[in-house]
Image (tube, rainbow, N blue to C red):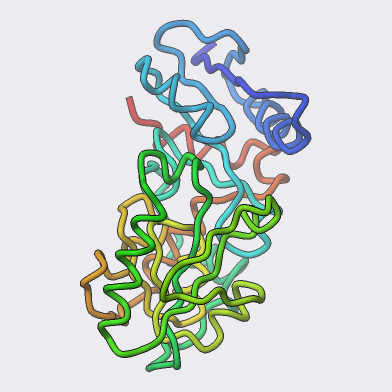
Length: 266
């Protein structure tokens, strides 16, 4: 065999069985030995950063599988090496944006000039993307910074926390109800730590602030709570985003692995 890789996942979890099973099928078509027991030096493929981080800390190159950021999230799988979202290594966009236009080209709306409120986007406390962050303290800082611009702030809690009955109430930022698209519809600014929702905000034409480089919208967002709104060029970023996520068919056929194998870091 020309290569060897470990595919480690939880088959009792339906989404992991589905997507990791497709990855197994795709890799099996290449000249690669697949194992479920990593040896030192083996690259590891697994689902989510919580499962990936221990392998990365042991020195393995890790391909992290997660749901996509574009389109219908659960119809796509994000595939990046050695990090989650903005911290991952991905295949370079080599097609002048053709993949973006084919799958997601109608998603981008013109930039918005203004709106009646700033939208503070909540995330899940304890999630891998926010590990080590005191989100409640950060929300308070965000409200203070945002109200300085003279617009009211509205808080959209993460739907998972709402479902768990643990969504926080934020002083100075009343909770706003509705889907993410609905709450972005009149927002003048979206503020987030590193939420994937920033992708939808930018595509909706809402200027966005991200406070952590793990944000998938980092290249087209302003950085830090004191930052001014920006309206940058988005096409280059959008083209690159389209090469971060793959369909079940593209993974099972081996097409996705062909590109990922080329960009695998040491």
